[in-house]
Image (cartoon, rainbow, N blue to C red; front, side):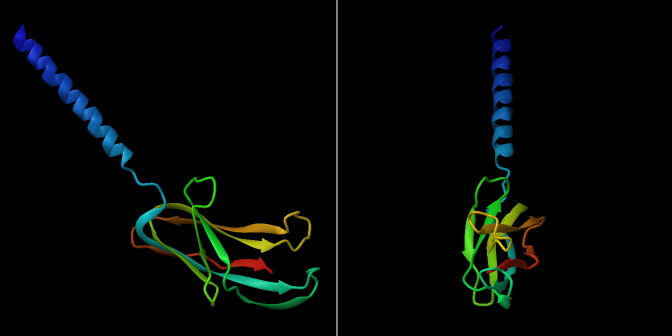
Length: 141
């Protein structure tokens, strides 16, 4: 009888150990975000119009503009960076997963109360050490 109780205790301990180990292993899956070795980069291109958006006054890559990124299914932006003097932005040290990169453009229809709308690019990183180049984010200024 005592031998059977000891065997039962060992089996219960093994079962609990397996359950705890499984929980630890499955909870270690990494979500999109920082901590990886991949990069998302691109450029922001702007067309400069007059106040009524009827006369194009110039165009070129947009310096010093905030660019935002959302990691996975986050509800709001997860990080931001600024474009350099050539309109280039870069988000480094990312893990595999889905990302959304966006900037704000002036509303050329003059119908949005805030006067701004997001220009969005969805991006997927599929491997480590990957550099994903986003097509130009085209905005109005």
